[in-house]
Length: 619
Image (cartoon, rainbow, N blue to C red; front, side, top):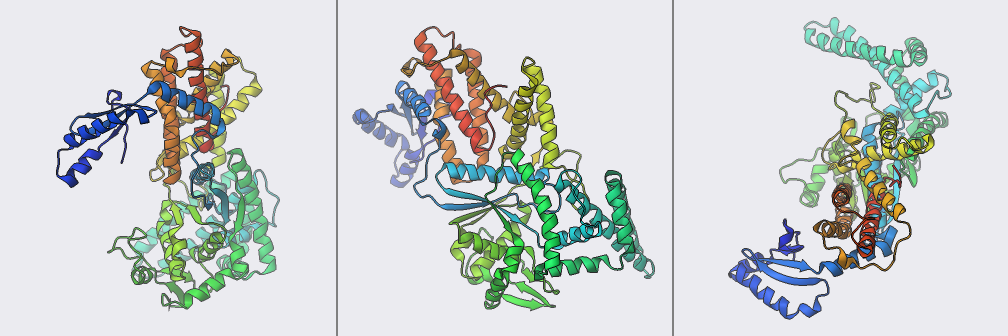
């Protein structure tokens, strides 16, 4: 029987429309069925401990009225007794789960888009752990590919320099400059050829436009990194064939050539050190760093390819090895199971290029099988633009006979983060880094904390600002439905008045302040004295936390926790503004309200912990 919360408390605390479903099957009036249920419920009233009455109302609804005195006592005592575990309902079927998140290529700093990935992945890890699963957070280090070879080329030309500043920012500058200079060189060569080709005027105009754009990008990079830019320009200008050298580096790395391995691993490790600093500041941990190259060098990728070649789903075209994902889906009847429309054709997947190098998704097949040796369920937190690649990956697993694994491979997709007026591109060196956003948030939070609590010592204000600023970013990235864009505006992110981490954190700090002023609490409290509608609304809201938790965990929706925390903060602040706690009409009422405030504190703290946000006691 499905239950819902009535829109108006005068219709009880729970409601069911089951009578309408029964009426359809029995061809009876739903109101008559509701009356019959009401009559039987009255006869069995003594067996209900928390239900005061059951009423048939409206056209056939069954409304349940809770014994609010008993219910309040039970809810508040549960929160106090369970404390750090309140709301975390354990699963009856614990699983081994791997959550792969962040996995930014080690070629430039983690930008704010990847930051959303990190925050969502961390929240999923926390929620599933709290539900009783054995969860491990993994980071896939994508060190095999042209981008890494491109940095290797620039890094080697510079003489493998010591990083200036944060290492990932330094490596990102090398990547952007090297890519830019090679792009300009390539476009100049194409433009020269086009100018000597009759009838290519349109192509000439297009190439000139693109060249002008890259020259403009080069000017910006030179202004930001003059020494790096000039040195790379000098070295690349002398090179005979930079593109060939980049391709050779890529091939040598896949082949495991020692000098190239040492070169690429060196700057990749530098970049990862920067990533670890960023994630640590954001309060995000990773349990396992899994190198993509490992699966190439240990033969896993080659073995996977050999097994795929034995199936009827692989073919060669123009020296390129292709995987027919559509044929797999049709042959094995997989479209409906994997959410693909019957008339939707799945494009084929290139497994191996003509030069013998593999592609990302090819290597990801081996990585997925490796993960499933260690987990029952694998959750890949990857942008929604990778939807096709993730589907092709699942088809490849099915082709190899791993249908169960493919079903248990979950693509947790998410949308982009937008800063109004800014466009991001790692190749062009245009991105808003997670580090920059954290710095800005903490600086703005410091101004707000100083306004609100000027009496606090400077060191305390800085500590609070770090917690509030970073919490504000994380909440903004997690509270929006993952399928929607996050439009990042500071007025919203750091709003202390509504729907933000600072607002929820401030509510928690307010509850802590009330409890501090009260001193030691009386453990014997009668919650029956909480009769005001605002008090009872707050109790009911606290009681719904376990349900919100189950919904978030079962459906992988961390934004449900963020929404719940904001709604609870709203209820608490309405209660706080209307009803005195320490100066209540009687000691009994004051004690009961203190117990209510403590339950709010516990619930807000637990909700914030689930989405990786700290709950400060002072603000």
